[in-house]
Image 1 (spheres, helix red, strand yellow):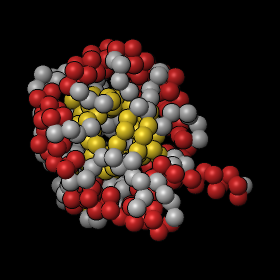
Image 2: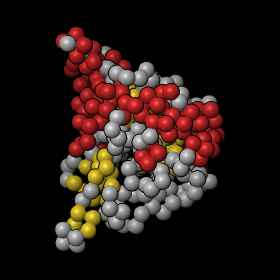
Image 3: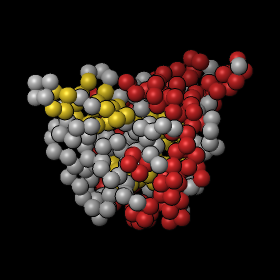
Length: 309
């Protein structure tokens, strides 16, 4: 049976599948449930300095089989309340990565500091939400801002810092390099792709906010390309995110250079049982291909490409 353990940036997971931020992370019980269902670890909702209700409905447009268009507006209970939920997950032994968002480097650093006492194993910086005004990709599209935010958080905490990068940019590699210069232990790629739907009868955008972010299998080729480019350009590990629904999808990301992967939209469609299925299917697939461990697959496609080139 293949060894599925994942080790990167000082983080150890029993398998490479992480619950993505923003999906199923409302409560400590849901985080715990994802782990008990088979996830290797979990990423919390993105937490800010104060509670946010998010945007009014409608906030989600569902596309059958291939994903969501959403503009939630980063709803969250705020840093005062959410540590109670992390405590529930940590009491069950769940490896938790805390996700935070802020308007500037100082706010990111203060939020990360508040997260550390909860027992998280790393902090993920949401520099990539495409629809929250004043946050996310509005900061994360600028390499100088990415470097400054990352550097401020790295100085403030003594746990691994992961920068989650936006695909809504001219050059995601420059963002990854900026995060690396700032001291990031790893980067996550990608967040949702900026997109729009219009209700032709109402003659207005479908979502109340207008623009949203597209997730699901439709964006997998974009995520793979970003992971491929980043892994060839920086020395720090990459976490692959975007459109993973099958073990084959996950293995593609690993072979493109990802050390772990985050699962989001598939959880929304299938429920947390998706983790058990992915773990079992990846183990069988690796055995079938004669790959003894998931770690052996990381970057494998680059080696073949280099030999054939």
